[in-house]
Length: 369
Image (cartoon, rainbow, N blue to C red):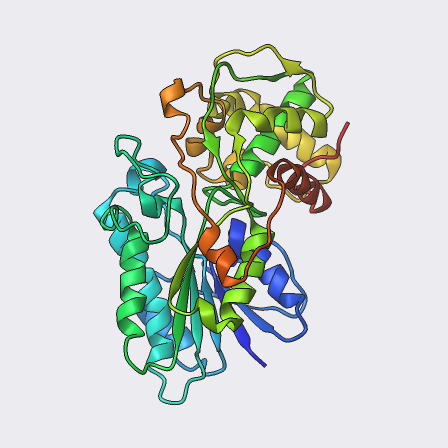
């Protein structure tokens, strides 16, 4: 029976990966993360590890000859300035080192059973985080224009080199966009930040303000689809040593989420006005501890512990953009993965609503009024 190690198991993607594979009858699951798991998944072994520490990883994983597959969904963000860190060579080197620290102990085993690793990357591989760069649209996997811009390419080059020749193992890279999943304390959890904002507006008796003007066109990826694609990649010979874009398959504007939030929380949509969600979260944050206690939520009472550094990047959802920047986040082609045999898709508006409800079921967000 294959045994999967999920790295980054407490994150937005990793949490859903652990749940998905644990529910499959033919898989055993080991989860690893620096933080303790916030969600107990029956049958899953959790191993705490700091991937920046090579000696610690060697001690923990060097004798794990039972691991056959790895999904690498770990990432280290510069929490002081997330956006700056995306283009920081030192931050890139740290993320490559983390992958190396995890993988090398398995490759050093003379009698190991390791067969496949899937790397979870994203659209920053195409320079989507650098608005001054003129990107080619739609993003396609064979576009190598931006290979020096982000650690994704350095990680891919590392596994490509290590798997060369008759190594006996293979790799696949998946590139989702704007992944929506479940996590506490993650630094890129935009859907939870928006849900908390709407819940705070409801608590304050305020309308949910509609942002003004135009917003960026974007794609999102349901973490459930990422999990299904990982299972497909791990068991499909055609996916070996390939890179695939992976999205829900449709598009939406960033301002499209506000009517969804209003409906989910029983809110009136306010008149369009300019504002920053991060500033509104700060203004309304004194209401959150009382909401946690009154509704018996599992959420931390301190918003920083719940949302991590996510408020740094959530303002893009309320930003007003000139028309010429509507493609700021870029759009990708998913034709390659569909032709290869994976064709799962999802309605993005329904996906946003689904995760609001999922967070309620997990008692992270309060119930509807």
